[in-house]
Amino acid sequence: MDDNSRLDDLLLEPTQSSPLVRCEWQEGVIRMKGESYPENSYELYSSILSWMEGLPASNQRPLSLELELNYLNTTSVRAMIEIFDQLQLAADGGRAVQVQW
Image (cartoon, rainbow, N blue to C red):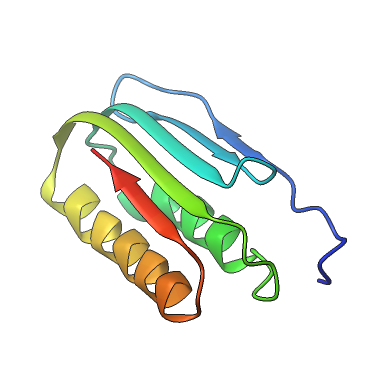
């Protein structure tokens, strides 16, 4: 994917056990709001991780993670660690990264 390509935004509607997730490419923002204790957290968080991995490495726009999570179960915490690892890789690659929790 080159710099001029546009990555699709990702929208995951909230459920009783999973948060609202909005990944907005143009704004460089990942927003999560609600509670996270889904039966299969891998399914939920793998979508977010795939979206993050699709960000063009050559595009150095800032990336922000905005979290309003009231509760996370153990498997959700493990998945969030993977998201933080991806953010660290982006920062190590020169991208400005911000987390608001």
